[in-house]
Length: 214
Image 1 (tube, rainbow, N blue to C red):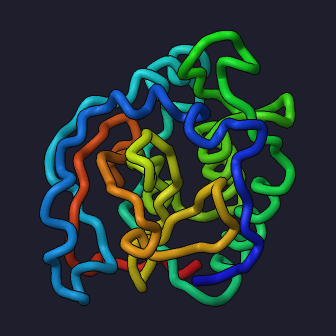
Image 2 (image 1 turned 180 degrees about the vertical axis):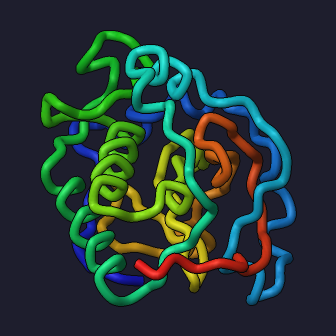
Image 3 (image 1 turned 90 degrees about the horizontal axis):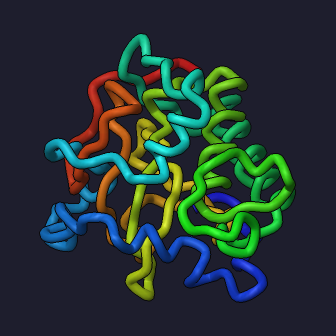
């Protein structure tokens, strides 16, 4: 893992912040613990799934943010400039944004948006991290919004980063950056690396064939 600055969701928002995400389909949760060590580092896309309601709402509210398509499917090399950028932006967003539930901020559940108020819950952290990383020049196809179940079984959102050493997770719960199977989470679905508006179930996979140079 990289980094050591651990965060917690504040103000009682740990379970409640992403409670509505717990309603997502739990397809693709089985079989992860039996994969070989080589396969454990990577998640694979295992079939179509429905997009979260919050993602659909985000695209309705901000259609321009959902029109982009990756030019190619890439992964990011660990080490060097790209990895330093990931560490910096992950820590910055975790520090800059105050955790708060959608109920407390908007009076309703499942509002996916950029945390322009300086406050937000798990998916808002994820959306901002992805936006800043793409603006910094990292490939969008390697930065995938992902739905998981946390250690309490509640819905949670993280950003999966596809690298030459495996699928790493950026999480507002901690500024440590861990391989997906080191998080203690159960992975449900994420954006497709081919099209961010398509969502797929995920499970253990094999190493990607191509690697981004940056």
